[in-house]
Image (cartoon, rainbow over all chains, first blue to last red; front, side, top):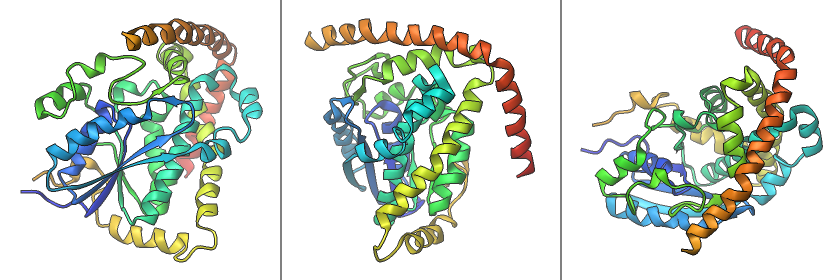
Length: 271
Length: 50
């Protein structure tokens, strides 16, 4: 029997196997699921993200599924590109990987706005430990982001598949995959967009920004995100400026719903 | 077929870019290692206090 976590949830959804599995898991516990795909100008084949939406709709027949492709170029300009020269001066070559964190934070700003406007108290993503070489999937960033961003606006965040390394195989078993072995794909993926900057960033993060860099990755991620949070808050505040209901009212409405929910995914009822 | 060629063309350009930047970053992080260790200590202290 399905147990409601909340009536509505959204998913940071690229269409890849991780976010699709995360969407499926949360979709089994809600009545309305919104898949949020963000479109910066520098990604190729954004429409690929639609492939797993159709599969999810079949796998979750009782759930109302919406898929939104949201342009985030303005947010990227205000957050990631706000002071690129200053960032370069401070972080140097490590900016190769940190730009993905800035881009992710620009997407998060758009997700907060969407959730607030549509009264969605829960958001999930497909972050996994296996990819924690990239700053935005570090456990420390995810924890900090829960506190500094999601909780601030009354949104409960979960990373339900963080310890899962074989989402493609699980989707195969569930009959959701569009084809087998999707995790083995690289660049030009079948079910998700390709970010051209993501290729050098991934090479940089995997090979040079882990243990080899000592504490650099953790320190940089902490400082970079701390510098960007005020910009994220400003983007959100500017969006709601002069609107009725205002930001505080919307956030407090969501908080009233999300406070009742478990803080940890493992404590969510899985009946 | 186009996709397969595209994949390898992108990889042929972008992976060496990542490797070149990575080698530079590796040297940069080695030079800044002491500074990073100090900053790490400060951050942990800040987090403990809060």
